[in-house]
Length: 443
Image (cartoon, rainbow, N blue to C red):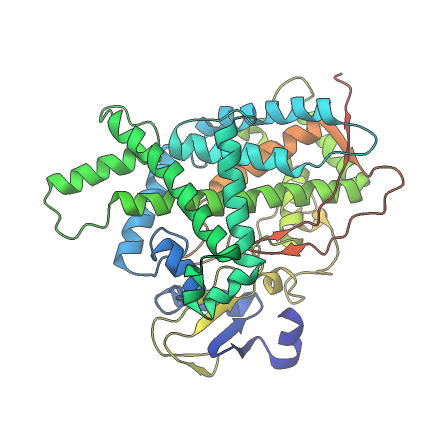
């Protein structure tokens, strides 16, 4: 997409079958559309496979409008109350890190370790704690089954013949192959999550809400008591919100952590500089805290630079115009699919010097202090900006800082350096890699 923009300009159109799509490239164009014209560019297209499975409910894929705004506002406020961007989630994240460290010490060897399962489990458990009020042991069979179901469901939707559902929706109902498997995966996830909702309903204490599910159930009761005739706060909607939190909150953060560790493997000099900063600020005997964040500018700059180069949702989630509009000299009809190319924003040579080079120092000023750049938007921009941005930032900082405080990550001897091309599915994931994990001496 970015290469095409150099030929056709920052705004160009293409057809995916009969569907008109307009691709927005570069920071100025993306910001103008999503920030300056949110009422036009904040809707979601009706993608058949997603519409069938989500009933156009939840937060991530739901259409823009009054119902979506109410649901998002409630969820955002509730997540903040339970620690989004605040210190109260630290123990949960750090507890997961203790498990990762123990596992790494057990599994480390000359051949390297596959980091993905450990990171995914820890990130998923943060979502479980916040949304469902419980953590699962990494060996818990029910928990492993849920994670495997969600992973398999995404894989089927993105990398199998099931993508044809978006062209021929009736294929979803075929009684064989991946179509049948997709329906079974959906049913199994539904049973798991609805059982949790029912458990919460039976044990609900209005004076002591434990998590997002409790808060949502209390809001449902409040609206029923107030006689709201057309309330959208239902158990059905809650089910899809929980699904959104798992899908959007696990895959993205997991892949961001993996990308960062991969870059540390490939740039050992940067890893060493970051470790020196961590040692000087925190030492090696206490866990990092969010209160340390302001004292670790290089660590923050490194995380941001990897995020810039490896936008895990490079083409964002598709938007759609909610009305006819004129934009950048083009007439764009209502219902046009809009692709905000976030990858192009982070490789835009008009705002980034040598945009293809890994250089954490670009986020530091001459005194080594962190620079905040408005054209750094890995979580999107506008009304559809990622609802979990603050949580993701907290997880990235604590996980990366703690792991680099404890271990040095390196390339297994004799192996070629892993590719930085990545694998594109729902998100941009690093190609599978293993890393040698060497404990640092506790001094």
